[in-house]
Length: 285
Length: 267
Image (cartoon, rainbow over the protein chains, first blue to last red):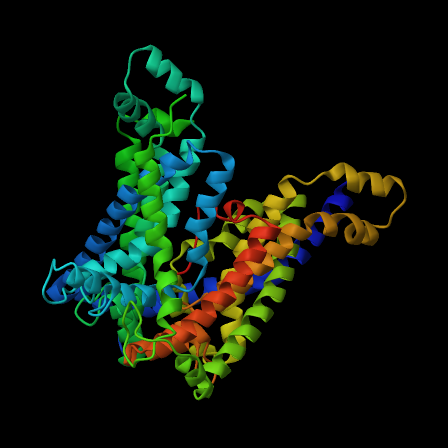
């Protein structure tokens, strides 16, 4: 008996070993290393100075705030655009649902650089939108649609909305159809049913989608770099500059951890707020 | 029963259009005959495609990306399948921890993974090497393979394996003739997904490429930061068509909707 169990365990360890070795060498050790690095000064002495920067220098605080603000705006945009799509998906035939799922997911598998380039073509001075508005006579000179915060939010929403839609759709699919009937028998109209029955029941999906979109936009680098231009700097862009151009690893490492901490912290706070309020029961199932 | 409210359909159509439009505008733009980006494109010509041929760095990085993605797919396909089998078959103390550890590279932002790997690899002398880049791509692809294999195993019919054993088959033959064929769609999709993850990755690669080992998306990214010309459009069109090929394979083999769970990666 015991022998058999030992052999089984050995087999399991052997099968897992190569993946674990990569996980340790390419992920866990590097993460520990930059954590240590973030608490060192240039002379490799222990110090808090890299983190202290964020407390005393308003420049960094401003960038932190901008990163959070842009992420929140992205969550809002993904939610407003994504909810109707998820709702529609929960009401159509399986075939139609499959088609919409494919169309929403497929573009997401093409590099974010190329999707952003597509946005440059549409939002640029001679882009689709400016050209159309000029032709219609609605504007008389091109308006600025990117290289600003608007451009970043558009780019982020485009690449992250898929997570919101799928999270919302998953929780909408689970709603028991008889609930709609029950609500209508009790005299609730469509709007009332939506707000008192559907919305509370999809809270877990909203939370999952929002936290996912929020964390992914907090740490996105390519979209702010391409759609924001030089004036819309966010934490990931600063971290990149510190490490790659200024070769200041310690500060770069500290920025990375601060980014991770603020994302996890805000997500936890948000989750607590939602889960402990009125809708506690929705989450306990 | 509620009836299909068409306003929802209209909004859905617009959102789908919003999501696919960036890719739709790239291809017509690549046939423009002028030197600047404009939509609708001006004139018609293939010049931006022939100009790719004058830029060996893009052709080299295309081959490089292919090589890297293929190796990533094969290696993470094998390692992920082994790990998935072990996690599903043998429940031992710590297997839950290992399971969540294996998915962790997905939950930590790609940017932070990239930075951590760069700094650590510089320390141990792997930065800027092909091995270093390959290892990091394997790291971010393995979670997908593991997850797809685990999903494949959850609907796995063990009676077939048991029947084979009863009939006297050796473990190796059971694995080769029963287990593998049944798991093939899951493993194959895992590998195609690993290929795409590697082929299209920017955020992790950004920190690990060197001038002689650059991937195509990164070559495009650096070109875009210097100049925005229709050359980017023709290069991007090539990548779009190429990715599309793999997306269609993925859809045929596995179905995209099953692929996307609640968790994901790389921006």
